[in-house]
Image (tube, helix red, strand yellow):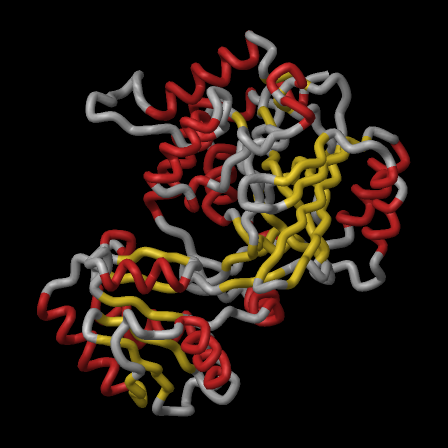
Length: 424
């Protein structure tokens, strides 16, 4: 079903990487970069990929001189100066990412490939979340200007017989291109595999699979749209998107929830929020926010969520634990319940992104409510992986930002260029 092809990756040259280390160059995906972190990344290295992936905006920006045109110019400069270099041969790349969460160490391994774009109607590539208009406009303008994928899609495929691990065992005994630990303590190891037997075996393995989008729905939608545009076909790689593909059975798959922060609400909307909470949930108060032990609080939400839908609510006056009053929503996910019962009625026809923000860090969420950065916040439990894939197979999308496959994949290890990466 899924088609993957090797490609000539564009990578940072050894002359700008000291001790084979990319820690000062790689960046998180664009949607995880705050304004503060953007500034930090700019200062970290003159070659930091933030200049391409998520450049600064300026008041004087206009058509012909903006973050997208600057990214294209910067990429052209880096290629000309041999800071970015094109691989001589087509490869698949093996990528291993290690991380620690709540005192436990994890590791996951995937294959980096050019994934053939398929319309969702073909049921080859399956989404599980709705998307937002603004991020898609942003990513489309960047793709039009640079004709390159800097940030990979994160895809999952079924491998119950563990064939992928066996296939990758020998290449991983070779010396990697990169092996380093970044500023967050996450480890990254990358191998380029050019051996024809491996290329064919990997392609055959994926050819029997559907691909579930774990992260990168906006990027995939953008790639589809770009591929449909007039003139896109002139670029050999316009029918493909950069992807990291990981087996569903990989023990390193971790899902965290995206908590919801609300801001910019009118007094009428705030009153409606409180009324809807009382109408739909049993409310157990948990005291003021400053004294709240967030670890105990989140553990309690998780425990209650095993019995029935449960979530947390943070308001300036204090925290509460919410338990759904009715049992008539069996099988409906917490994120969908919150959207249907609370967010949609309160926000009405307003663009969700104008009032809604997301964070995986529960302490940052609390701080936002305490400092006035948010008027209210809902704390959610993670969505189980089985629920993600089951709904994707049924064609049922969850609300935007329903899952965070932790940690995010970095941008900058290898770039997929729509022209160069598919040239002979």
